[in-house]
Length: 463
Image (cartoon, rainbow, N blue to C red; front, side, top):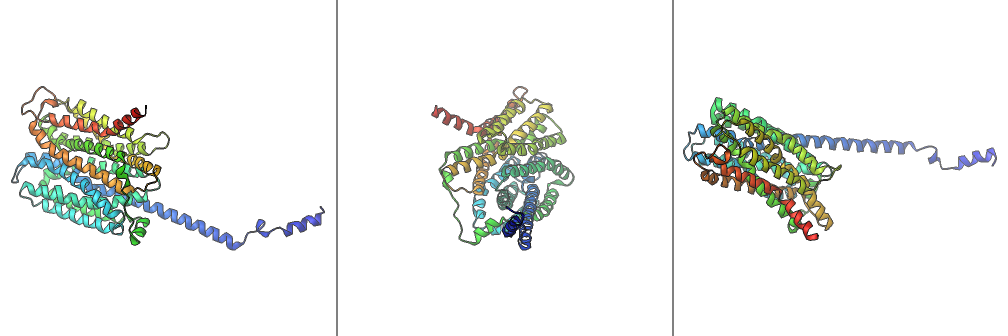
């Protein structure tokens, strides 16, 4: 080939291989910029949703997690009509009502009313604040049960359900269990900081003014946080078109019922120390009010790390652990803490109570963070059978199971306390009036790992 023929051949080649149309280049750059902009906007919204969800843990869980401080205050400063012992059910009733109402609220706001989630959350803020304000004017113990245990709890559930659905949807593609773990860690931060704050307010102003201050704090934090959590666009679009039915095929799976029963049993025992640990420390081990309040703080502090830790175990890719394994680690370890540390405490023995608060608070406090792994397992089962499944609805039902456990534990706690010995038998916690409560806490905790027994049964059948 001559030099001139080579030049002619190169000139006859398509010009796109040598030069690119400037309009196409500008279009590609514009598309990349738009993609980067959308990605940045999505990341910003996800960050806002995570921050908003974290802040909401204060008004939603602050009172319920720290009710033991109020319980101890009522025991030494009772001025209302009615039996003071009834106050023991307020904390567990509050938790129970919140969790029990969640399946219905999750079903309502999953698709049909998804576009009204922020409005519903704001209505929940109003109900919560009005209830706490009314409780500050209580004259009879049933006023406290109605306003704090029922109405305020319903308001908190109305805040929690739509905002948690949005959290799950914004983190639907990745890191959902980690996101849940971070939010649950913030919940435990609230449970760690609020006992001392409430104790100072109660000692200085009494319970009526304290409740009014709490009302203001709840209003300020919840209103600002709700606006940080927009509904995911996918839910808004689906709610404006024909409503898609929620798939219920997962109710045919045994796995769902095994985990639900385990959650009920674990939750029945988990609420007992939250309610009675303060009074136990003050009456049995004769600790000061400050030391008793410190125990409740130490009970919640480990949950800050535990929620993120168990969320990571449930969602990690490096070494895969099944949901049954992770839940059994939490359940068995918390049961051992109750039997060995709480049950063996004696008068003036603060060291064992501190050890119990921290170990039980870590392992039992991280139990709900394992639900991300439970949902992943149920989604995997549904995918194998080519079935649809709604993770938000499933999470709501697991919360409902937790509510049944809280209410059951609260109702069982009063007769168990009466069944305890009126006089100390021996020098350990088992011999006090709280002995039956300690045993109940340990047994219900260990059955939170029921899933692993079911897995072993299936493996044995295959052998």
